Length: 339
Image 1 (cartoon, rainbow, N blue to C red):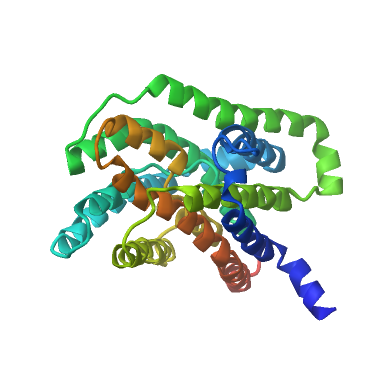
Image 2: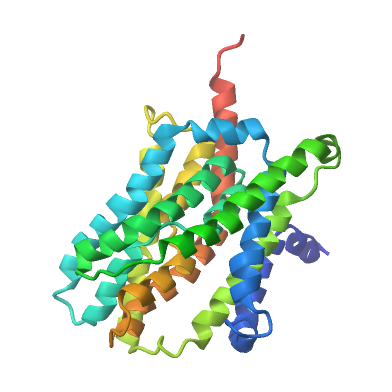
């Protein structure tokens, strides 16, 4: 009975295990072109659902106040599109003397150059109870910014350049992120009293969508023929990708300093938005920038591994980060002087 009760409370963690196990057993179900059609259901419907859900659950004043939090936006965008790729470049200078395949190392550099994703960072921030409005803005703004910045970063660090179809990517992001968010806000105005009275499980809905994303992501990973390297290289790649933990810790340290000006909820958004990288935008960009390149498959491997790793790591850390945030918020309330 206790086991069932614990499983009910930890349903999300159980769901992650089942999603990965299901992907391993039958990866063909969730791959692009498979029965689930993730190229439509995930790339469009799931992402649109996430932002409609956010538009419905967020108070308009929370969104507008997030827009003017310039310091927070600058921190996240500079970290993810400047500090991250530069730090990876320095790290790779040390690894270049090892026997790791040079094209895998170049692939790791492309990971650093990628923009943030539009979905996973928002869902994880919402699951913890962090500043969801800030996560929405920075995920969307970072993705739009990445359309221009990422090709320039690839040119700077790898010397590869190409023209990215700005209009088509921009329109897809606009239709799956901005439009559903606005519609959600409009609908909220008409059913605001009902929402406050019934309190729908917005968090559970977002977490369920994340499980679908995890499942289809691992289906792609397990079915990809290019992820077939020697064990030495794979272990090292997985070890290198674990530097995401170091980046998460770094953002945590910077954003929790006494004079940082960030709340615990802000820190949660910073941790996820600053360290997550987009596979949805990343793979199409790599195919365009490295079109016809004989080592394209090897260059893509680190991003294909990093993407499921970041979702899995973030999902596992949700209870720990949530516990820290709640305790920190309680501490802040206790230390406030009485009015």
